[in-house]
Length: 623
Image (cartoon, rainbow, N blue to C red; front, side, top):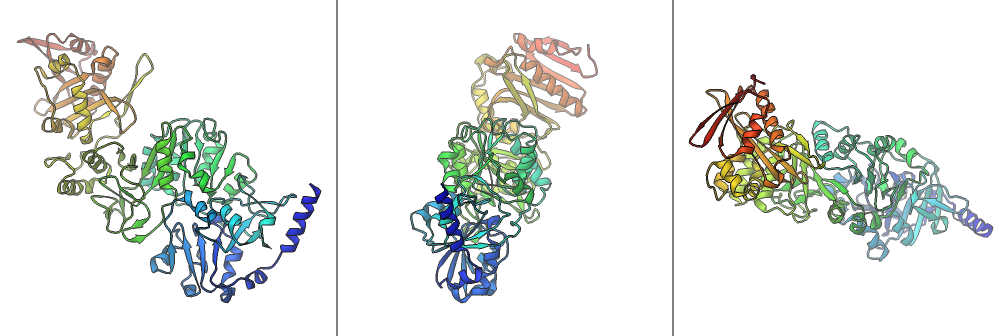
């Protein structure tokens, strides 16, 4: 052991150098890898401009650039060229000008092409923590493809920075892998996200409804992921498995919401490939065994992601078409960001037990001037997540569930979560594309499904039935509900034999204004992919300010108190809207329905004529 320590110390001293000496030994035309994001060796990068002749015609590889540097400065475009795997804010203009290159690739595959030599690296410039007595340094805040670069580059230049946090996992590299060592202390780059605005917060609220207790989440960076995290304070025992994270997880971790206790892959650990954040974050991860960093061919491998039960992958996008194709790396033909880990995590979460892949996207861009939900993707736009891979799409207007749905169902679900002012246009375009019924209708403008109306009913066996207003995307659910009713239930509900519930009959029952025509459904199952177990509705007679009410419960869900709760809920909403009372027509033999009315707590009057009871009661007239 003493021999090894001595050997490492000797290697360190023998390869200790200055930046000028090291750069003078470089030759033109080389492919040079630069450490990622906040781990960028700033001192080395800033000195590139002082050694142009030695770096002429060099190709610089980088995962993501945060800072403007000689790599992205147009003054040096004739000297060397950046090739980035993800277009960060610093490189966006350079790529847009054609002064830098972008390589579209899954994060999980970058280490592989380095290891196999398909992407040969001549020189790797990285930043690491000082070595321990055994000569082990930590890659700190970025391991992703940096580990592969250090292990397979012909020549490795390491900037030793005592401010680099020491991280656990697979972040260790030995000093004997370094061909040149430069000691330079400097502040690690910091990254600050924008504070989530109202739109991001609304998206975060909806996404949080899809995150169960005990879930493992992919928590990226940006205003939307941070908004999601802000809405998870009431959750319990969350875990983290993500390619990257930022300060957004810190409050949840310190509050004990993130415990990683129920993770089924690396239980007890926060697993990531790199992080971008503040000094507060770096202090938290420094030598903290809870945080483990691994290369992306491990972290972002869909097979490993899928080992996490209840995996929730949250990714953003730039544009999505009505069939569910997701573009996340370009604005038309103009490259804007990158594939990143989206495809890996969407696929991994889909494969996980009870996994939920989510695309979270604002409904508009350019201050509301354009819709991000479009009939067809812009010319040149790339598909990062295919229509076959997409599951949940969340905007500030709600949740659309697309997986396993036909094109008509997808189009209507996406129109519903689009910005209201673009919905009529999207519907007309969908009709032109023959995606939807030619007579498909939308509620009149301003008739939004009231989000505040959400209820739950607990059955004696602890099964929970959730209730919400019916909307125009529920047509197929309503038809499925109808065909699951017994013949007697249909006869009681429609007072006659009704055999079918085709589109022309169903559409008026789901296109509502929620003021004069109101309906709610109770359901079980995941939100967006639920099955109706009961339906209740009322229609207002404006002349009398009384509303006619009706409700139905599937046979296997009857005698559980659901009908009573449904009626009470319908009454509460009607009262809120200033309606005086309810009327109803009930067949004489429908004893169950009659019992619900007469036990409602109101003074119910009834009149029997031709085998039908005409029932009425005022909300002001309680027993």
